[in-house]
Length: 139
Image (tube, rainbow, N blue to C red; front, side, top):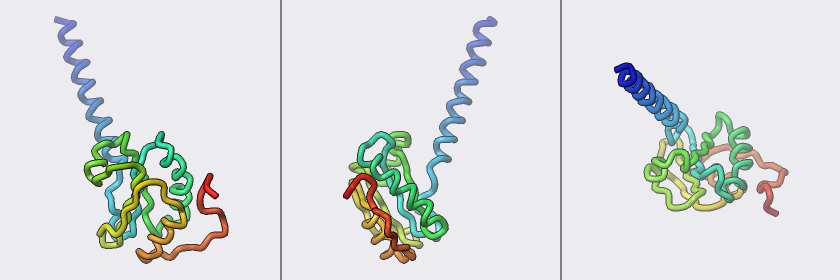
């Protein structure tokens, strides 16, 4: 009887733990598009080669355009439900939304910083021209 009670308690704890992780994972994916802000979402995976090449570009853009545009990365291998939500066929895929939340541009594959900036500029974001190289590892 004690084993049965212990087993039931363990199963209950495991069920609660699973729910906690699920809620935590769901909250780690932000609402896209970000309300009232031009949004770029980069859908990829941490271990995908082109995604790895884009990671420093995305990080740089997140810092440069904080408060001006939302630059978001979602790992679709960790959050597979996002593939269907955004109708992803290949990674990385970048999707741009205007301030009203309407999709305005979609790109598949590696996307150089200059190309991203051109789309952001078209969407109305004040783009800062940089003298730094735009692509890490690409000349």
